Amino acid sequence: MDLSTLVALTTGATLLACVLAVVGLHAHTTGRAQRAELVDRLTYTGPAPAGRRRRFPNLDRRLRRTKTGRRLERRLAATGLDVTPGEFFAAMLAVTAALWLIGQAALAPFFGPLAGLLGIWAALQFLTWQRQKRIEKFINQLPELARILANATQAGLALRTAIGMAAEELEAPAGEELGKVAHQLALGASMDDALGELADRLPSRELVVLVTTLVLSNRAGGQVVSALRNLTETLEERKETRREIRTQLSQVTMTSYAVPVLGVGALFLMNGVRSGALERMTGSPAGQIAVIIAFALYAVGFFLIRRLSRIDV
Image 1 (cartoon, helix red, strand yellow):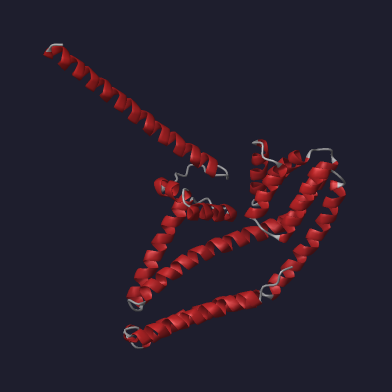
Image 2 (cartoon, rainbow, N blue to C red; image 1 turned 180 degrees about the horizontal axis):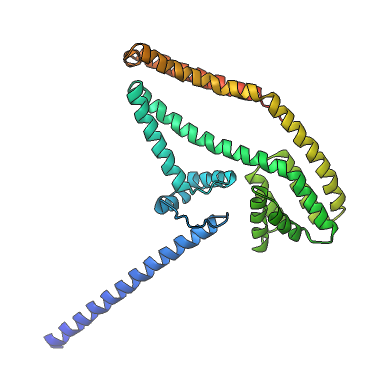
């Protein structure tokens, strides 16, 4: 084999390797884009947003691969907010950084990290508050939901069809949650699994009773109409009872929030009366320990008041 033939073979092999590398890179990039699109489509169970572009998609995909991100995604799904885990995490970091700087500038450098931790706690409490508000609203819709299901089954419709009908007639959040159940049933999920996930997203005793009634009726048959009629009356009574209890405990709830607010307000008042007092106080380890103990006592008072005023119906 002469030199010219060897050069030609080497050049051809090099060009072929380059072509294969370009084709492989293109296939890899296309596959990653399609996979990311499929993950976004499968993990988002709510209605498609109209005209809103999702932000921080790379951060969102990385978060969903972690256990913490998946837990955060489930909490966001329970709140009904049109926010991805990446967007919420970025907003939480921004709020934490802002509170850190405000606490450090307005009070003392020692209060910067404490204000940052307060921002993280406030963000998680916001999710809990939104979820609880959505659960309360869903519970108030349960009597109407049971009534629609009873009327539909009495008319001879199957339970799957009745759930789809209720999803169309009811407003959010019941309509949205039942729409997810109907979507899962259409994809082949069992009635037990679809309703079980609904009870996990919005946990409440009333919903557990309704889900148990529907699951048992779907398994063994029976008088589902009469059971739903009786359940409707029971849910109406529990709805009124919950409203009365919430009204009676409204003052206690406001007190639980007023206690830590007064404590933080006292810090600003102290620093306003004598400028630099907090910085001098937190300049020693004894002062820092005293501040941490004070914040811990305020937190304990808040949780104790909330716990003692909680009445399960």
